[in-house]
Image (cartoon, rainbow over the protein chains, first blue to last red):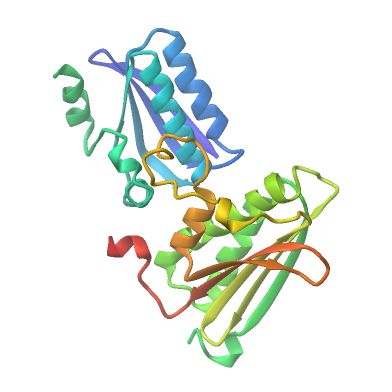
Length: 114
Length: 152
């Protein structure tokens, strides 16, 4: 089960996700939400994963797909507030080398201004 | 004690091949984990391995055919928890699996399931049952409190 909230801060579209992102639960929703932001022309997208308690390989795959889709549309997609488990997953799969991620919202928002 | 004979148990669940049952099996694993003494810090990772195996069985093994079955056995004995996930598919040669961490695979959206299973269990092997079913057997050493990711 996944819940979400989208808001704009400092010119950045922030997508806050909560719950599980697994096959059949949250994966398609996350894809649609990011697609929607890109279709609205958002070029700075920040995914707040602080409330994500569980993610499987499908969730990871959706994050990768979102990243490449954003890049093809000249948009920046970054991550913030990774829990230890999500961070471990990204490290083990070496996706930590793909994503730009930050510990705090302020740091992440500041990174878009550079 | 996890390796006390009184804690040995075997749970077998057979469900129709559908992703709707992955959560059910995850929940059962939570109960089994408590009974057999799986260190709590390992539960989420073992659950992740189970979910990957079940999803593979449904999508790839049984090719989304709801008339087929997925059977999951959770068996604890001698300080180990064995989880076997059976489907009615033909299996596949393990050599077709490539390392998702390789640069050419890093941006692919899939191909990480078996890799994660191997990371979060203490042994994973493919089985061919006497009845022709394909199985994935995962072994968890209940004495190991640390997961591989903690030693990164």
